[in-house]
Image (cartoon, rainbow, N blue to C red; front, top):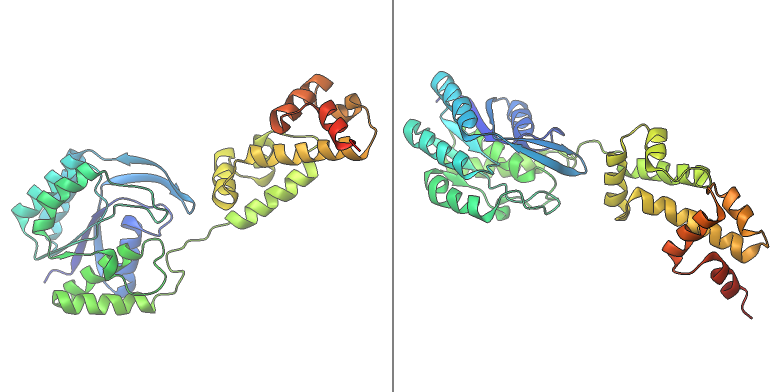
Length: 300
């Protein structure tokens, strides 16, 4: 049998799943992989921000170029997000009939985000699944953590063992054993989320009375403001701005309760352009004016 495995799926720039992970695992096992990209993703270890799904004609051209030249007998399929892409692939696979087609339905991300619409999956069930030798389900995964890319790893391993001459049952057995032997964090990537979040909190503590701009803190941490937002939402379920504002409000409240400092001086100390500016900000977050808050705090 031709030893080349053709993987048809989306990209994952983190290397934890998608085309990159397929090539990596198949090479780790000693095989050779060729690839067709169906979707380019904007993502990092915190999740997927955007998809750029390739047109059916482009997917068709990639697939036919590789099948005509390399004649792979094992094809592994992952992320398909367009009905016309599914139709095109079904036509090609029916025409060239490789010996094995392994399909791992990629319907949701590791974070539970829906990746494929029900309408597209209906086309997959009607046109693609009847052509497949192996369709992997979540229950096929071996017990252990079901981390990012785990189903992807299993299908790649199955494809590899089929390419080595195993039957379907034997390939599944060997693939599950292979996954058990992988390090637990094999596809996790290197994320600095918690470390960065703690650095952000430290920066807020240092600069909250001078800077309320998210862009300032992002610059201090040498990351983009959108990425900082991803981190704070992932770790704390909050935006960076809400973290900064909460710290500012807490300090204003403390000054109002524990000192006799005039409101104008509080505004200057906290970096507000005016007393009125501070009052609007405080009332927005606390529901009462600074004066009302101060009076309530000193009520016998």
